[in-house]
Length: 479
Ligand SMILES: CC(=O)N[C@H]1[C@@H](OP(=O)(O)OP(=O)(O)OC[C@H]2O[C@@H](n3ccc(=O)[nH]c3=O)[C@H](O)[C@@H]2O)O[C@H](CO)[C@@H](O)[C@@H]1O[C@H](C)C(=O)N[C@@H](C)C(=O)N[C@H](CCC(=O)O)C(=O)O
Ligand SMILES: Nc1ncnc2c1ncn2[C@@H]1O[C@H](COP(=O)(O)OP(=O)(O)OP(=O)(O)O)[C@@H](O)[C@H]1O
Ligand SMILES: N[C@H](CCC[C@H](N)C(=O)O)C(=O)O
Ligand SMILES: [Mg+2]
Image (spheres, rainbow, N blue to C red):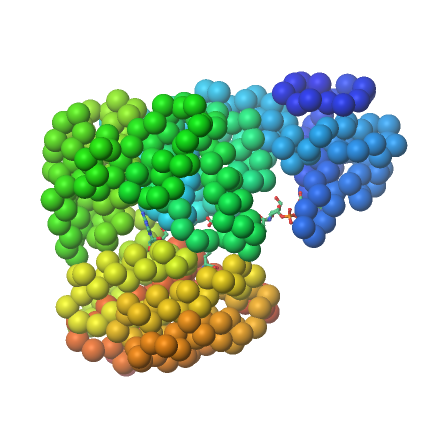
């Protein structure tokens, strides 16, 4: 493909030679003969520093932000923002042939994207899905490295979806992705908002930046579907110029509302009130399942899916791996649940939801991620201690940090609580401890790692699947 074709949607500041481009990358380690190398300045590396070396290595051209005095250079204002339209053009702008539904918010994105996909598939629509757990083209699964992939991977996934005749793509749009321009230039048919609470302040620095990043999605969509029970639900779509559809529980002003809500360990039931009225039966338990299913139904109804078909699909929906997932514990009189709650609000929601259905104690086994927002730690500690009957404080993904330092930060938030707790740094041993000390009717909540099948330790990444850990403890107990 000619360089000018790849640059068709980018404002270029200089004259350049219209060479042939074989492929594109923003990672110098991937560069091969004929590649276009996009120089991105990041927190730990600046692509500009190797631009000349890349041309010597065989790159056909480099895209940069200032004059590097190189022959085959293309100067643009912001390379990070240019990378998305460049990748889109390279893959033939596949998103133009898809109806894109983007979800943003702190919690509930993954769960809600799966619900929307299930509703659309129930009426025979072929869909792609992009998000934290996995990427999908119809029923084909591709591994996910990020919640929202970088522009090259994202556009290549869109291409696969179009080639496989998908009509819709339902995707999670993280605040980091919005801030870093991973979806720059992409137009969404629907943008949906779940909620906004604290997370990722290590990256965004201020609450204002976090909010502004999330808001970007609603400047790039035709219709916004938003949660008006959340204090930011209306603010986030304010001035965005798109059509706004609202949902909320008991909020009669919303376009779609849930009333007469009933919770049980089997799921949630409520009356959905929109253009029509019907009883929703969502087989995923937890207070937040009302919001997630309400968001999914509001999106589907906005897309014109028949009311009865929406209710039918929700009643058949299966949960998502690692989200309020019950782990088999045959012949035991307690329950083990894996959940991905890794923010103060997520933890508060899952523990209070479990408290509503628990016959015995709720024992929370949790830690906090290393190299991530440190201010979350005491808050999560306080919430876990205030709401649980017992806490086992352990490691999540310590990454480069010392696990005991992270635990210390968590305990800081627990010091005023009378809730008993135990510290077991090794996560497998923490799970074993909780199971061995379980009482009848306890719910043991393993919070934070959800679908993950690894643990990132300072010494490297190891295979770690909590389902296997539970099975191994049971085997040991049954010996
Ligand atoms: C905070 C954050 O989002 N950082 C991302 C960002 O890092 P950065 O800007 O600091 O990049 P950098 O390492 O300095 O490199 C700059 C550029 O030089 C390139 N490079 C780098 C090294 C080299 O030898 N040669 C080279 O060319 C890199 O490919 C990059 O293009 O750009 C990198 C390249 O795209 C990403 O890998 C990196 O993701 C980091 C690893 C990350 O963990 N991100 C997480 C927090 C994230 O994005 N999470 C969200 C949401 C999570 C949720 O669901 O809650 C997500 O969407 O997944
Ligand atoms: N609507 C919601 N409101 C609050 N908490 C929720 C909601 N839905 C799910 N949760 C809690 O948050 C956790 C994460 O849910 P989910 O994976 O669906 O969210 P997400 O927005 O995709 O998160 P991430 O940004 O980490 O990918 C769940 O395991 C659950 O404990
Ligand atoms: N996408 C989130 C997930 C965190 C999950 C938790 N297990 C942790 O490692 O903190 C992040 O990268 O911040
Ligand atoms: Mg997610």
